[in-house]
Image (cartoon, rainbow, N blue to C red; front, top):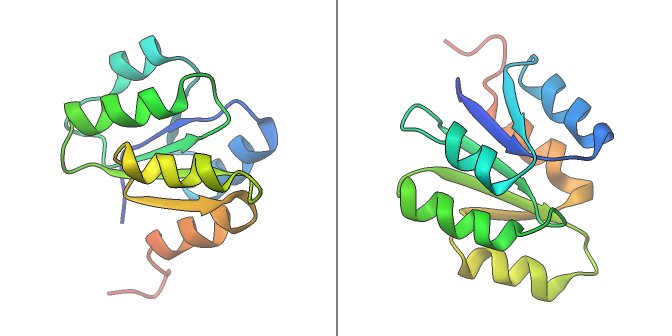
Length: 114
């Protein structure tokens, strides 16, 4: 479904899992300045690790720059205030880390979709 995926993720395990879901077709950035450079109208999905420095600010910036962008933010299940804040900053969906891959698979069409 999503052809142009951008992700703000530094954790190598999650980078690998996200790449696997999207067959390696993901651009990864780590900083706000790199996000701003990479974020353009062709980006269809932005994935943000809420434990990245300035993650909430990046959610807000992405929402301001690209109003219709699907933004999926994820974080630890014990960080309920952080997860709620992501929604307030403009995340389309917020999930706990343990559910990230299954949520992303929901966005990926099955091989036998027509």
